[in-house]
Length: 227
Image (tube, rainbow, N blue to C red; front, side, top):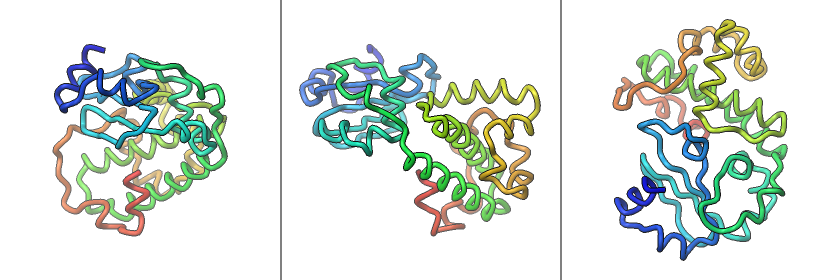
């Protein structure tokens, strides 16, 4: 809580003003699970009227009172994550018990994985290792998330996914990939192409450059890759 208050002040906000505007304030992600690292940001859901605020350190998502009761939110990946793992810092939870992963979230995640993999494959030759690692890790994490969603379960925080992956790869990368059904969404060629980076547990250090951006290689997949 002290870290959050300091961070709010750093960006010209305050807890008092935030709590006046929001009927509920929920921390989610790695901070709510006690798994945050030195580079982890703080993720907040605020129920009320406000605009999205996002920096490398702080991400505030605003949803109206009506939105958190709508099927779209209650069936979404984020909505279910907040409902299951979020910690209410302010206000009373009056919607989380109604959250259920819906089919639309599963379909979206499937499309996203295929789009990411195709875009990465197309740009592979033009990317340095740091950028290759970054996007292979993103594909792997999304495969793990899809495994949870397919079981109609809320997806845990990203550091928890990495811990699970470290355990899974102790028995071999191929078996770990099978456990998250990678073969249903990743072609054999993509699997071989990404092979060197499947065992990576995190993103590369920030600031590494690439000769050619991934997004420029496949503009029509830009929205999928950015998601």
